[in-house]
Image 1: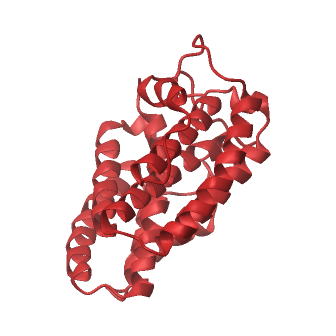
Image 2: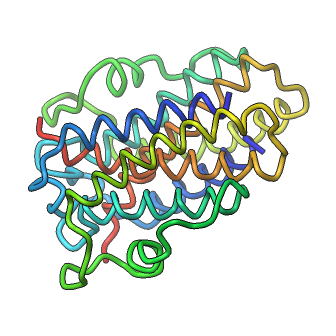
Length: 135
Length: 135
């Protein structure tokens, strides 16, 4: 049940990223708030961290964690390009989907709770990303 | 586990509503998008509907469902005032918290799934409402 929501939200986020342009991702959600590119990097970094917490592999992108989780959005910080982040997102999506399937076979309560909190976290930001789409 | 997330998100939404002013609730999340007042009414209407789906009581606010779920936001439609909606939210919060406690004792899979989807729905809009808060 939780995995169904997780997968649906991942698909949802993926289709938003496919829909919004690079220019839209450079926009702030509201003046002075995070940009779309920051949320893209933030989700990749949080999900990378999640995989390591679940013992599903070592963190692949510790630099992204520093940039997109430990630090707030800052237009002057050196970030990967939107194109690079889009590619990492697509690559990670394959991993997340495959690992989640394995994991769903033998969920442990504490670890399932990690999936649940990441599911609501994803939903939180999907709600925000939706605002970047044009009417 | 799911009820913990649900309760935490309700609390989270409640504290955002306490923080933002009536004027902020009249703002659009982005130009042309929903206003805060619409999301406040929308959450009350969806949660009212949820209680009836869970057989925890009849729908108390069918008019709000028509206004805030069946219809998109529209500045010219006749809505209850922010003050009235704030009062309904606070009243409903007591009901939701009490009913959820009862319900958590005997969750059924299908109904638990309703709570889960409403939890991610709530998270989605909490992410958006956060944007109304001042820096």
